[in-house]
Length: 597
Image (cartoon, rainbow, N blue to C red):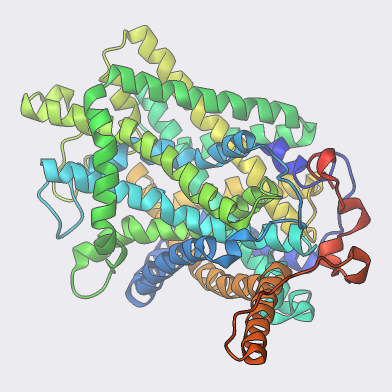
């Protein structure tokens, strides 16, 4: 994934990059360092401030996350089905840079991550045993449908619509209009070129770096929690405390720094490919060893439940005196929307770079559907498998076979270890189970390393005026900062894993508020850009000319029958726009294959 990320930008490894933007880098770096210092010096103080700010955010701005997420999804779908769908993300006549199979495979890579591994088992199982407030009774047939439908709501169309908006704006501006690959460049139609190259643009890029930093740190924190759970499940430690979590983050961050310094891009690519294979093998193991028939039945039921429940889920807000609903929303839906918003710069930039030459409709359709199908299968296998085993154990009153036994509030599901508990219920021999547990921990660790590597490249790029391959110092700085921020976020939550998880969630929600507004403005900017595209203007002009010609002919012939004809004009009689001509190096012949500049 990393090498494709670099090669799709058109820059070879070792090639020089634009100079460092001292203002953007300096301010973002100060924010990161100050947060880390605060987290290590006074973790309780940071945790208290984050909790207070979370309460204010949920009370006053919870509605913003709910409304904005639905509007982002509607916007992406409307753009795809509208007349803008025919616009290519490149010059007229340019072919896609990657074949469809490769394009889908790379999106599969972005669709897999620590989040799916961490929540794949625990979230549907939690909703089955503790459904959202005001829905259905726990541990029932209806609870299965609610659990799977809610999980899909959080992990399919909505997050990928957010990614699609950023990816669309970046791909259109870069490959269609020739703008720089800075986040701020997408706002040119809204603020003007001078503004995006000035203070406003720098502010947007700083917010993009900070959003990526906290979103990535949240993912890495989840990875550390689950690796700690794997260590406990494997019998290598009795419990997981803050010291062990920080040690895990430190070791994995050191691995990332070593890979960045040595420049082993091929090694990271190899690890990423191995990770995909391990993830698929793990899913096959659970599918075959778990309640296979139950999983197969869950897949269509999940889709139906998602469609049926969508209006209610999309309109649920943390308002009023229902404190249980407010807490549930901050723990789940609003947290997810904040997390996805913070990941949009990274994922959006990546999918933009692999989508050159595709049309807007192809881009949005692929980005929405491919990862959503992957998430559906993943949650059906792991979440559905967990629910099936839990239901079977409940019916047999076999407490030893249960993956969780919820008390009030659902605090008895341990998200750090529930994946390993699921593996333990598959009836594997002890030696095989130990090997699978170790492999699963390695899987999460590789996600940590490659995720930090890729996210750090994005932050480094934004710090260096859109450099496709930022300097090693910049990449290392943001990689270390990501690990340090993840550790600070965990410390702010508390010494226990469940408290640390809440610390991650609280800070992620609060830090993403400004970027929700940025994404909302981006939708307006993209619409203005697409409305002025030459392809759209030519279509409007052709319709206007045709209407005018028909009207004139009807008047001239006074209602009598007539025939209209068109003649082909010579090419040298037509003055082509710069976009239609393209730079010399971008002009391609259909026989030459896809453009590579």
